[in-house]
Length: 435
Image (cartoon, rainbow, N blue to C red; front, side):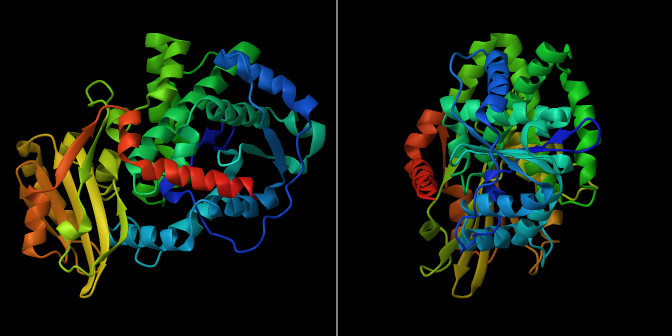
């Protein structure tokens, strides 16, 4: 998804964890005006050359006036997340202190996107939406160079969806925010690289180096949310600079073949994007069933997520530097349970060595004491740390000593162990095809 901000512009994506805003009960509204094929064709050719591929995808480009953006985003995102999922995710974020007690992150995100989105590609059905700034529709919509850049960027996403499962997978990753972050970074970094390669060919503008791009990004985009939560800032914005750095490195090492490989074998954690020079490949997942640690057999899961190293880093207040021990993140999983005695919170963190966990423990304890609903407690055994409220001793000890962590070497192995992801993706496609 692209967003306009200032003279140079900036970009951001919707992570899967916040992909759905409001599920509308009404029927889908009529589609807006469509960019004519003869107007679109030259841009498909440009992206095809920039990406070095033989076949361009079939894609519809629909034009939106600024006043139509909020309703269309609300409609499109509402197809991905229902009211129950929205409520449960909000409750988990609130319990961990990422959002204020009475804040609604979904409405806040919708307001933000409605103000600044310049275009987005809906992977669920392959439609692209372009905002016609200045109230221009028809042939002259692309007279604005910024709109041209946005179109190239979003067409890159359409090309990705034509050859890779990642865009569709990204819509079905509820509960795996860390994986969603990594895939978003790859897709946005690739689209940015395509956009800059096109600008180099068309206008002679050399793609910016990573440091230059990051500085521009911080000026143009991150400054747009000075009062936003660290979690919202990280999930929406950080995939862009981290993804651009990743793609630049892949291109430098392997060229076009590397980008093709990357879309088939992406990084699977935010840790890989944060420090690619030493992060473990593949992914570690904590495997635990709620009945193995819940204080009552009647407990049920309201929400569960893996936040990754990016989540651990941003859990601390914005005015406090994240602890360096966060770089020792290896795996995590959080649960919010509805139990007869009330809600139960558990966030299990696995670090790569006991020394790092020991050093991080007091920082976690200090942060946990400030959480809403009476704070939370922190315990440690070896390399494991547990932030919890409401667990009994048996449950705490099981998570700290018995919860298993399994390593998956690549995306194929991870998907084989998580068939629900592909099933959810298929259901979303089927629902979209009947719209």
